[in-house]
Length: 394
Image (tube, rainbow, N blue to C red; front, side, top):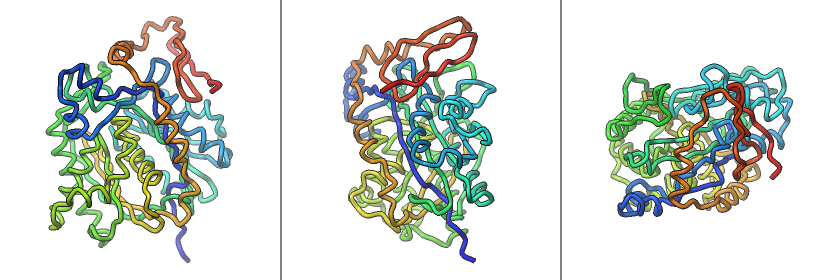
């Protein structure tokens, strides 16, 4: 009997409605704008207002998928983030309530730096093999935040991706092979007592590339595939130039010539467009890149095999792959994503710093938050140490 394919049936992307052009940041920091545009491959960073957090972003990303599908069929909800809002209660349960999902639904929050959405994806695929009449909803949302004037500042960002997983998916059928790598390192971390991450940038880049090569070797051994068997590649994107570095390193490790600019543009370029506009979205980053690839590529990707590399500092890596399905374009939300990015409010530098300096109250008192531009949901305030979310009439 032919095994039924499992994978991504639908994708939805969301980012905050405010953005800082990195040319504005470059002027404020007295640096050449090309250091950001060419050196990092970044044009803008998404900036969440005070009434936006990973819960509101995740719910805004997921809502279209819930509305267009069979809500009652969703029996697994996995929320991947390293920007959690509570040490105990899973952000998945806030989403469960905001999206009015069935009570017979397993809802869990997952964490392992930027890798956790891939762990969620693989767990959900295994679960779907046992429950083929159900669907799983994976939400990845994060806010990348570093100290002002730090080296990581221009790589900040925010955003969310929601994925509906199903058997016989419309978008991407996942291959069964996967190469893995884990090691206990301190390249990036954020202690509970800090709101800004700590990172050893050069070391983290070396560990990322080391993980990629280990994962690729294991994947190749399992699958028997080589570089020529792939039509496109998506990589975890702390900044978009990282994908170009990673693919060049992988090509050299395979004995292939270093890819020229045209080859890189063909193999990884379409997957960088959205991330250039939002900055790093941590757990959502790889899947934001996949969304960008499927949405923006002029080529017909039906039948194409895509290689995907997921990396989470600390560290865990995974190389896996999937095949784009024949009628994938009917399931895309490309126009909605284009409008979202084009309709953002551009911030002046002082507005960005003012928002950055705002902190979530921790005294447990009654705090109502001013209303900014958000998606369908917002963080209305905090009272008795409880976050209060509300639906917004757009």
